[in-house]
Amino acid sequence: MSSFHQLNPLYDLPHVNLTTALALVPILVILAHIVPYFVDEFNQRTVPGPFLAKFSDAWLGWISSQGHRSDIVHRMHKRYGTFVRIAPNHVSIADPDALQIVYAHGNGSLKSDFYDAFVSIHRGLFNTRNRVDHARKRKIVSHVFSQKNVLEFEPNIRLYVGQLLDQWDRLCESASKGLSGTEGEGGWFGQNGRLWLDCLPWYNYLAFDIIGDLAFGSPFGMILNAKDSAPVAVSHKDAMQSYGSEGDYAVVNIPAVQILNDRGEYSASMGVLPPSWRPYVKLLPWYRKGGIAVKNLAGMAVAAVAKRLNTPTDRVDLLSKLQEGTDDEGNPMGREELTAEALTQLIAGSDTTSNSSCAITYHLAHNPRVQEKLQQELDEALGSEDERVATFEQVKRLPYLEAVINESLRVHSTSSLGLPRIAPEGGLTVNGVHFPQGAVLSVPSYTIHRHKDVWGEDAELFRPERWFECDHAAVQKTFNPFSFGPRGCVGRNLASMELLIIIASILRRYEFVLSEPDKPFDTREGFLRKPLECKVGIKRRHV
Ligand code: HEM
Image (tube, rainbow, N blue to C red; front, side):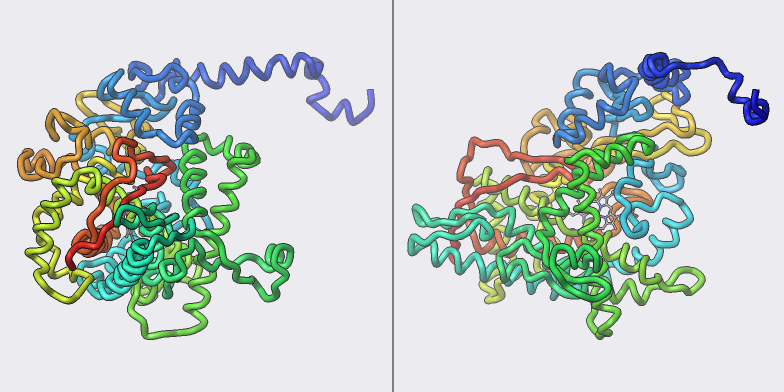
C-alpha cells in the first residue's frame, strides 16, 4: 500500500459504485422531505393543506409561477378553513385577528427569506430583514414621506395628471373624426361617439412619470411619448456588446413597465423556493429572463442617481429629501444605499398606484350607478372651477370618493398575498394554536378582504355603500391594502394623495363604459396582483 493510501482515511471506506450512488439520490431526496414532516419543528403537521405542500416548497413555487396565488390560496381556505399549510414551513391564516399578532409593532416578527429574492445592488427598505438595519433606514425614509413633505410633491403629481388629460382630450378629439392609434397609445379608436382604448398602459405611464420625477429626479416622458421607455445604465461590457457605446457605463432605453412586471413575477416565485435551490432554478429559461429584468431595473436606478449626483440641483423631490436625511449618528446614506432606496421607491411606488387606479376605473365603468353618484359628488365639490386637475385640498375629504377608492382597494388589493413573517423568540399564538420561533406565518389580504363576518354576505361584490354600513372597528382591523406595523407601506400618504387626485380629476372629466361588460377583470399575480388590461369607452363630460 502506498504511503498516500496509508495517510488517507477515506481509502478505507466501503467502495460505492456509481449505480448505487445514483439509486441513493431519490431515497435521500425523499428522506429530506419526509423527515422534517415527522420531526415537525414548527408545529404545522396538524394544519390541513394541499398534500404536496406538506412535504415540499414546490407546490407554492408552482402556483406562484402560474400567476394566481391569492385566488388559489383563497380556495384552499374555503376548503380547509382558517389555517392552511401552504409549504412545509408556512401557514396561511385567514383571520383578521391574526393581522395584529403577526404584523403589529412590538411583536418581534421579521420578514422571511422570501424577501432575499428581491435584492439587487444593495438591500433597500423593503427587503432589509435585519431589525436594526431596517429601523435605521425606516427612520430616514419615513421622514421623507411625512404628510408635510408629501404635500410638497402635489405639484409634480398634478403636472402629470394634466398631461394625461391633455393626451386623452386629444384622443377623444381624434376619435370623434374616426381616427385610430397605436398599441402604445392603448390601441385606441373612435366608435359610437366614444374613444375606445386600454387604459392600463396610460395609468402605467402616469404612475411611472410621477415616481420617476419624484424618486429619480426627472420623469421618463412616458405620457408625452405614449411609450413604455425609460433610460437604464448598462455596464460598459454589456453596452459595448449590444450597443457599441463607450464610458464606465452606457445609458440605453428599456420598456420599464414590462421589466417591472417580469421582475415581480420572477422574485415572487423565486422567493418561495428554499435559498439552496435558487442558484440552480435561476438557470431555467423563464427565471433567466427574470434575472435580466432585476439587473435592468437596478441599472435604471444607477443611471438616475448618478445623474443627480453629477448635476446638483435645488429641486424638491424624494431623492433630494433622501439625500438630506441622516441616521441617529448624523450619517447620510452612501451612494449605493441611496441608489437602492431610489430603486425601492420606483418599484414600490409605480405599479402599485397604476394597478389600483386601473382597478378603480374598471369597477366604476362596470357600475354606472356608482360612477354617476361619484360624479355628482365631484361636480358639487369641484364646482365650475376652470382648473381641470383637482387639488388635494378639494378632494381630501369627499366621503363617496373615499368609499369608492377603499372599496376598490378591498376587492382588488394589488398586494393580495400573505406577506410572510417569521415567528420571533417565544413563538406566536393565533386562535389558541402555538407556532414556535422560526415558523413562517402570513395573513392573505385577498381572503380577509372577503371575510363575510366583516364585509357582509355580498363581500365578493363591489359596493362602496358598505363603507357607511359595516362595523367601523371591524373594518379598521381588517382592511389591509397597505399592510401595517413596522413594515407597513411607508409611502401610504403619497399613494393616497395620488389616488385621490387621479381619480377625482379623471372621473370629473370623462365618463366610462366597459368594452366587454361581461368579461371578468383578468389579472396576473407576481408579488402584486396586476390587471392585464382594461378596455373602456370614454366620453368627455360637460367639463
Ligand atoms: C396604492 C399604492 C400602494 C400600495 C397598495 C402599497 C402597498 C404596500 C404594502 C402592502 C407594503 C408592505 C409590503 C411587505 O411587507 O412586503 C408596502 C411597503 C412599502 N411601500 Fe407601498 N404601497 C403603495 C404605494 C407606495 C408608494 C407610492 C411608495 C413610495 C414611493 C411606497 C413605498 C413602499 C416602501 C418603501 C415599502 C417598504 C416598507 C418597509 O418595509 O419598511 N408604496 N406598500
